[in-house]
Image (cartoon, rainbow, N blue to C red; front, side, top):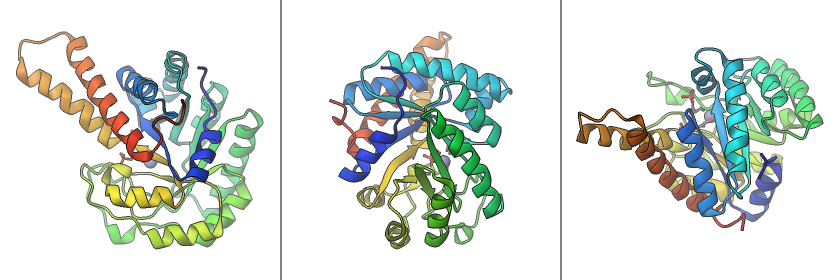
Length: 290
Ligand code: G3H
Ligand code: 13P
Ligand code: ZN
């Protein structure tokens, strides 16, 4: 299929109490692992590319990265019958514009650190642009931290305020809202619980689908509960990188004379495909694209 606007799938998931998985990729093999899993599971899937992934793919030039990934995403989506979207994850203002122009079907503007009113005005402008060409728009209120291995203070997380969330969604017209409920990006084990009371309070205020970032560090029990309460897009990055890199490491450790990249990259791709499949089943998206 051609790249799809994922919003109808997220809205259906929202109504039926399951979630669409959004899977981060940094390499060709990681993109392939996601669409292969979507095909086998007959699940809708979102390939998502972060700001740092774009910089990596573009060898330091993120516009070049967006061009590469937009072309790759189209080919990957067309290689399977399952519905696949290409999403810009945590984009800057200029990256969101470039991604819309170059054919991404979904974008997130990350207004992290901006004053609330400025976040609203930039998000609204980008949202109008996205909607004029049928692209799905996500933004965030509060902040899921990105400590990147550094120490951070869990008690200082900027959790989503339900009233601000409502004000933001109404003022901008966004399709989905990323909420901070205690999760943290990049955790290597599932040690975090979600503030489900806060989620319930947000839900009382607004009906648009909500997005969970940092799911790799959240207990599966809380993800399940959160999905049933309206977290209808769930982002997964670190769990995929762990599976991919773990398999590559195992192959290389077994044979110090191995030099053929195809041998270890295909092991990484297969391992990632398995974890994406497992997450699709867990989120309840498997079989929904039959
Ligand atoms: O939210 C972003 C994902 O965790 C991936 O981030 O590509 O900057 O490591 P990264
Ligand atoms: P994790 O790396 O914790 O899975 O977070 C993924 C994410 O939120 C991408 O936006
Ligand atoms: Zn994120």
